[in-house]
Amino acid sequence: MMGTMTTHLAHEIRYAAPLDQVAAMLGDPAYREAVCDAQKVVRRTVTVSGEPGVGTGREVIVDRAMSAQGIPSFAKKLVGEEIQIVQREQWASESAAGVEVTIPGKPGSMSGQATLTEDAGSTVYRMDLDISVSIPFVGGKVEQLVRDLMLKALAREERVGTRWLAR
Image (cartoon, rainbow, N blue to C red):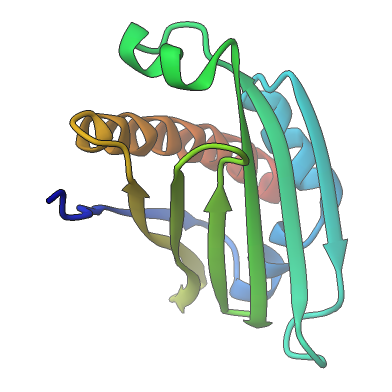
């Protein structure tokens, strides 16, 4: 009997800008595409609809394919030459979103939330996700790998965001 483990990811990015500017940036398709470019994706589709707090709120969907180059061979066997990652964010307000990340056709997912908190003119963008990969024996190793890939992606996002807000 295999219990499903989850790996937690918590990451904070501090931007030297007020919350409304950071929220506007996160809802800007051009910004999301710039982040994808920085993450060296193979293909990407960014869809943004609605407004935060209005009706069902703003929905941001980033569907990207990344090369599996450089990932360990045990994981490459599972994903093939590239990994498709679909990130869906439902912003109920300017400062809080439910986040779901799926890898279509693969037994793994991430879910949690993104929050923005303003603090003395700067804004903390926090991502809290539970990563779950239900593959016998290697699931835990794959969760750690996915966590590392997400942290690298968030580090690149931070660089793009910092430049974006400084414009």
